[in-house]
Amino acid sequence: MAATISICIPCYKSERYIRTTIESALAQTVPADEILISDDNSPDRSYEIISEYREIPGIRIIRPSHRISIGEHYRFLLEHAKTDYVSFLSSDDALMPSFVKAMREELEDNIGLIAAASLECNEKLIPKRARGMALPKRIFYPPEGYKYFTQGNVYIISTALFSREILLQAPVLPREGDLATDWYWAMMAGLKGKVKFVRKPLGYYRVHGSNAGHGNEDKWRKATAAMLNFLSTHLDADLSQNLCGKSKAIQKASMDIAPNPFPSSVKLRIKDSAKRLVSLRYRLLPKVISKAEQGIGVALERTRYSGS
View 1 (spheres, rainbow, N blue to C red):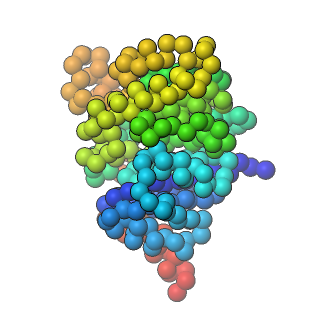
View 2: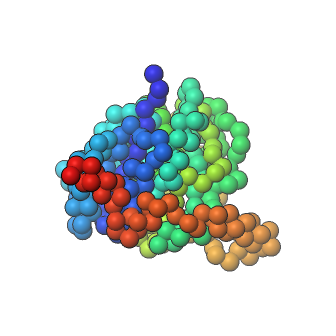
View 3: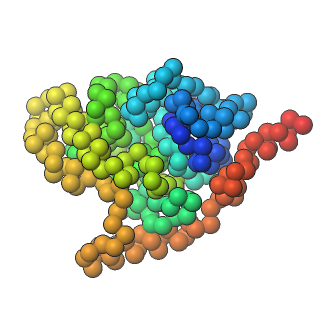
């Protein structure tokens, strides 16, 4: 029996972007087995927009009983998903139509994580540079993936697929560290399962002033330190050796949330130019996503037309 896949969307105060996110999940050339959307009691119109999609087959909408943290929201979705593999699509990001198809093609026994490249975009979802085009080509076998990710958080969670079973078995992060859940889960997935990378962009990562970590580096670094300290107490001596001591170095080596648009060295400028050139290939957004950015729900219109 083929493995099943959920696209899980945690939403909070995303009325500007959530339609695009949902429409991109519905526009997959090979559909996900379920699209699970959770609104964390948003004070804006997010839940109202989400509710418009309630009758579309394959969509489930849930809500926590009270406001929770980012990491708790990820865990809430993880526990409510009903599939073998889960993707966590941020409510301001979007997937390319080929995401699920590409992930299914990469699945094999004992996969912990498949992480794909993405396109870093501005607030209007215009691609500016590619991210992840130089990810490793080879498969990492456990615990190689864990060791690889201790060097930094080098992937975007919105374009990744996890083993739900492995994540459910991982100790729950304390709240003070759960802003770094994406990094923690990558290490846990690599500890127990294979890690594979797709060096082709499969989604759009939107950078704007309200990103969870963007513009709040101090908070993110504190959460990272708490996560690493927690992790070191839950691993055996060989794996946790010097992990706490490496905390500062690991954070320094971690993924830049907002890369410097003017890299200093010639080598870095050349790399950045290459990333920008790659993004030019994707300037024309898929029709469904382009319309959603204008507030038009193609999936909704299709459903209303077929029901009339």
